[in-house]
Image (tube, rainbow, N blue to C red; front, side, top):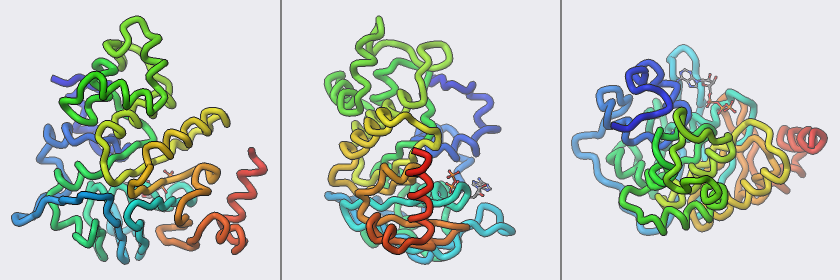
Length: 294
Ligand code: ATP
């Protein structure tokens, strides 16, 4: 039985919190099938794409609790192989977009499509196989580093695991530990920092090699060397994929094809970094503030 940081018998209780962390928890979903918020339609079709697909949000309306609307008619497109970044105040609904794309929940109005297919008509397993999420907080299993990386693709060889770790710039750190890839991580093993855990998540995602990628940037401040490293890793993972970045540091997304600025569940500005600076609105204000803080 897989042992998590958190004892399994508490999972039911903390299920919602874990789901919030957007971690790739397909296995856990299997364990807790009855807790799924959404179910496959009887005639659900598997998603099959050969190249990174286009993702569209069309007039999406969503609330966790009917009395409190969260997304209020959100529309945008991530063209195939491009990167769209979402910024905005805490609680404005950014991570909710990712949760809906991964289909932790269904939209209440509007639709989300992948290459034109409404995600509600697709099998969840096939949809989730096509999406890699690098979450803010990665849940690691109480198992070896190798297991934690290979979890991205069961059956991956040690060479493939190492290659993914190299690309995620975590190989040298792992190789320097006495047991290398056999080092146990988790509460009874090696404790990893937030940045190291995120690199394990990136390695895992590289190994999974999904055509759609969601990168939920950690809110915690990083020093500029670390920030540059994470940016380089993100660029490596994102190469040629359809990417949604939920960003807190604007400096990491200046190259995005489009940036969406959210406020209270609506997109209030959109454009490239240069266009948004020119518009001199909320984004420009956030940019000046972050430059000042920097
Ligand atoms: P941050 O930048 O802090 O990560 P965010 O813009 O990503 O914030 P979301 O996580 O999308 O914000 O949350 C949007 C709103 O929905 C918040 O007010 C949050 O409290 C609420 N919310 C999130 N998850 C749930 C839930 N499971 N049940 C009820 N409300 C929720």
